[in-house]
Image (cartoon, rainbow, N blue to C red; front, side, top):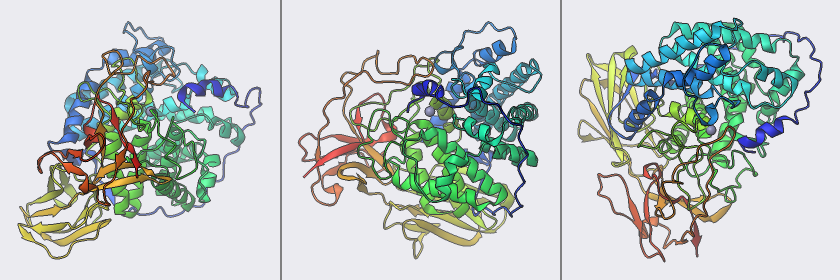
Length: 634
Ligand SMILES: [Zn+2]
């Protein structure tokens, strides 16, 4: 079901005219000892990206964010609060008549907070601070803690079961943005505003009985549970967690807790954020049921509902049985919000186990599903990543989209320093091969990762320390490599970890020590689980796409047309016929040759095909038709 169908479907919710019983307080569950994480992420401010594709993308996003005018982002908030405003309204899903208006302003707060921490950027922080101060003014007018760009009447409709888009989804973005401004950018006012919003939320939910609340949860509500668990953790206040629990969607969790995939027919991005909330409940309370929900969901989606890119969803839904993906290729696959949320969830799952497979998945989705979803020219974002052949990346029109994915994309490209490094008391994990410098303050150590990955297949870590320090340096040995090795200060080391594990060097480190790790990459094919004649070409973790030219792409259709509220970007174009490929031998290297120099970004070309094609990493291709999956003949 697509977004545009939701408003109509809302009318069918069976809430109208219901008398709402006063709710009894639930029994607080017996306390369980929360689990200790295996691997803890570092604060974003401790990691600085070094030159490379991720820092480039973050700088593009910085220009995109700073180019947006605060008065326009605040316009509908001020209108709703009855404050004077003369700003020109934004378009798309931020139009004054869109029931999701204000959602992007929430993402904007998060993006400013993430970006200011990532870059140590005072101007971005000042922008976020200004937004918080102005939103605080808007909150003063109703005086009951409510803060939104639309009136409370939308929540009345939600309570009454009348048609409305997704009020709590929108509120979640604003509340999460405020919490990010507090925790990442040190803004105390943001926490005050957020506490008032949480109090308003508690007051709204309080009269609803569990049955009425369960019906409210049938409407998309973002990550309200996750946000409130995070607020509870940030403030040490237990009742926020009780309020969070009211947003735990038990009807959705039940089958997952029992190890059953009943995801078919569900809207994907409505549901992943609820799972992140379950993950947070497990981390804060130790209730095993919530671990099981999140753990089963993560394994199921990443192993049986994900494409070669790591992404999931078609037409925003899970439309088929698990493992049935060959029939799920379209121009509307892999909504970018779902990739943003799967990365968030994977970060938690990795922290529970330090399982290299979770970091492998993170890498695959980060490179193939997130990095290339922002246009390098102006920073506008992608909604879907088409995985049917012959389409192109249909980016938004600046100031006229503000889709959900414009918001999550703005956050994704503000936190590329995240999840590269993790630690425990004894050492660090190098989970991603991204040029960066880590300030490991607890140990008084700096670790510098120099890499031109994937142009060069490997990485190098240099230790900077004032005094000799013992710790374990653990470098991921991905499942896609074979025959790698390591060298310390230029001398080859004996033994290397098997693919899918960690190369660990636990020793006393001295200033200037340098560990070099080679991780050879090879071409391989990724067949569809349910149709081995449909395959993608990969190089290490990278999806290689075939360049199909730009015939028929014009200035009129290169970007999505300005989007009305609730509408999604659409192609008005029949893709051209795409050549089939013929595998010549088991090793794709027999018919696909690298054409770029060994130290340059990897580019390839097929040979001996009816029509040969150039193959390039998916994240590097823009404004051109492509094929990810190919029909293989013979
Ligand atoms: Zn989206």
